[in-house]
Image 1 (tube, rainbow, N blue to C red):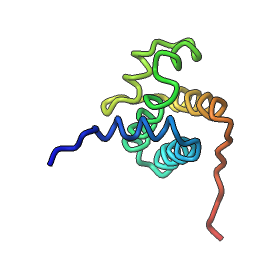
Image 2: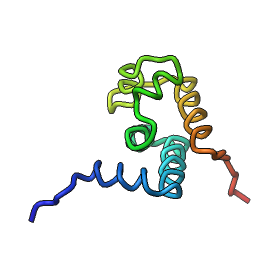
Image 3: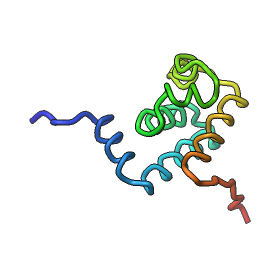
Length: 106
């Protein structure tokens, strides 16, 4: 039995409907990158951007080419830390949230 919606369409719909899901996906993207899984982090960040602000608006907001941002977060992309942090900082601002790093080692 075939699915009626693609996974990406389902994620996009959920992102548009649920502020809690948006924040959780952004948090998971950053968490993946901080734990060394850059590929998963970039993939989650792409899904977040596609389902929320979009690359066209993000490019306008950051005065960057949307295509350059898409390439940065593509599977073969190798973004500089400065660029990643600039994107994440802007997305946090748009979302109205602040992500913090907490040392859980005791």
